[in-house]
Length: 244
Image 1 (cartoon, helix red, strand yellow):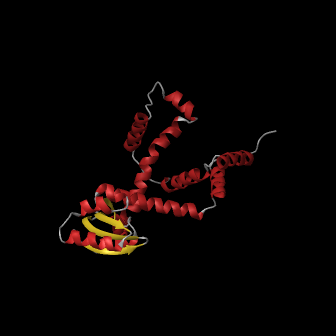
Image 2 (cartoon, rainbow, N blue to C red):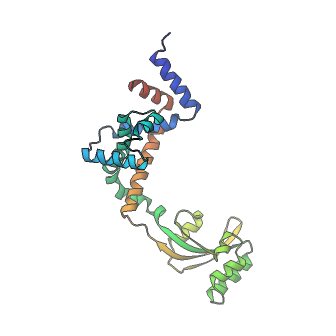
Image 3 (cartoon, rainbow, N blue to C red):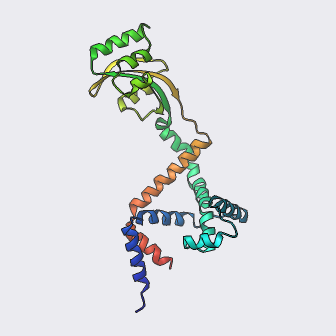
């Protein structure tokens, strides 16, 4: 008895589900749809194929064996090689123009800080340490090594560079309104009493690498939203049947 097309698709879906590959396939199918109409030149296509072959060490003499191992045709290999080029074009075209505004909304999370921290559970000791630093009797680093009760004692109290939003929200808030070198008096924070000093603020710059990072981030955010909006099994099933 001949197996129907529906049975074949159902069998594939069962395997994808069993090996937890359904979300990965759905993600790639969404990307395929997004880049389907992206134009490219023959030069871009050839360059992509050459780069792919170099990356996978494919030569004219090994190509047939590689394709056999991958269960792939030469056309499919060329499509796979071109895919990253099309994806980058999609990101640049669709998400590139949105980067400037997105950068402004994300800047507080992208700025970095270097700061010093001492924490103890004794408010009296914290006050004494604070005044020793303030009066210049001992350095922050010396006192952190001697008295701080966290992992920062091993780094002389110095932490960073880290994104401004990474520390505890109360610490981030203090650092965001600090000037470099500003020492804050002891204050309770959960079970601790902390002394904080901003050492350096490193503002995020919208340079080439940051632009690329934010462009990727916008794309990934969009892709995650697409994934949330679909029934993965139904989407993959429909996509497989449409591709037959």
